[in-house]
Image (tube, rainbow, N blue to C red; front, side, top):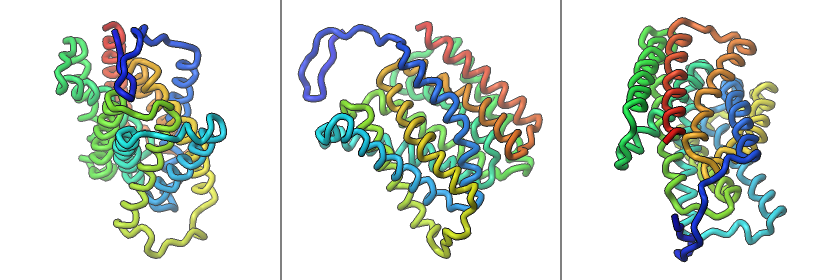
Length: 311
């Protein structure tokens, strides 16, 4: 297969991407670090406004990453064409503002473990997006999607019964769809050649969008930083350094360096980490709908990913 360069030229044939040690290292970081971010978000929003805190998180991480890229590769590494910058902004808005921002807002009323289990449905939406693009999935994958949707139905029961806010559950579902759309778009669009540059621009665009939404929502009215708890400050710092700078950058790099089906496996590891941490640290209840629905979704995702990797 021959590929085109960003400038439109033609390169030599490209061999299939190999699963290197760097890929596995990045996967483990995404597995563990992102699983813990749901707990961090839940602690942050206990005393901080959702969109302003999310915006501050990604703006800080984006600036730190841009500075690191300039220091490591030189300022020229931050250059991008107008098309590349536009693509990075679009992906950043979908992933950071839509995918992450709505989860942050939802976690003001939804337990962190439940949020993570709902987000685990990302591979289901990825299959739907690919099918909409003309890619016909195998029957085993379709079966996995249908089973996963049944699991999501069980997971929404706490919202229907009033145990948690239904709007929070629905927000997380919308967030997972937007995250899937952003991930799918990232594999198709012309992004900056340096994946870390692209990650920095995405975080800056998404962070700026989150701040703007926070201001429109009036989160700055009566804002008193002195009322923010020490735990929220520490959790925000953790999200900046590990959740965004390490985890998000590793994910963006994986989107360009590894098969999408392999990258998607984080979706059934993160919830296990998130549910365990929420139960251990925040004493979140592990009800039967969460346990049963979560098990169904994780099993369905496992079927989908295992099937897709064989293609």
